[in-house]
Image (cartoon, rainbow, N blue to C red; front, top):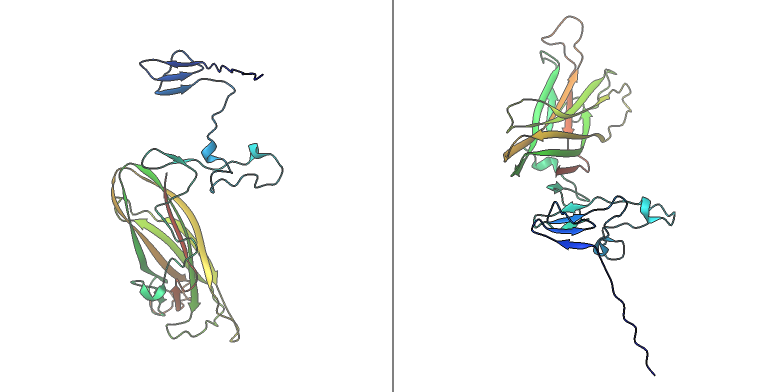
Length: 249
């Protein structure tokens, strides 16, 4: 003799002209889930079905304290996949031999002790007002002059990097980062250093904007005033493994 079991499932789902309500008879949106304690669960986004869900990353056997950002793509589909405007990831973002200008030279006769060059430009197009996030990791090496001679004067040289958004009316410098370099011994080693920074800026409207990165080297001026008294230096940028990331919020 066979036995048959029937299960009935009831839910407080209500359909109205405003939309679909779960836990409410008066939905305020196309889909309105009303609960002071409940949560929404999407199986396709869990660690079994999504490679972008890290699961129990801290290893405490409790997945409720392991969270991951949720994004919405251009079609309105929810996803855990992070797709920025640009991400150099594992590749070298910049080849110094291909940049419009990769070297910045501060001459001994520089009047104010500061030399600046535009290194490269990225163009970003947005269709709405947004917050733009920029992360960069920019390499450089410091020499006395373009021949690659070592600095041995034991006087500090400041190497700065920053960027500007050329499409905005302001001339503000974003993401400034600096390091100082000095060497006294003729046996001193020239090595690759990095300036690293993350910056956020408000883009007020849709449009196309040029994000231009600058390299700058500066030094003190010898006693006696400007003219032929600045300390010379030569900086080669983008000589190492550089990284860039652009992301809209």
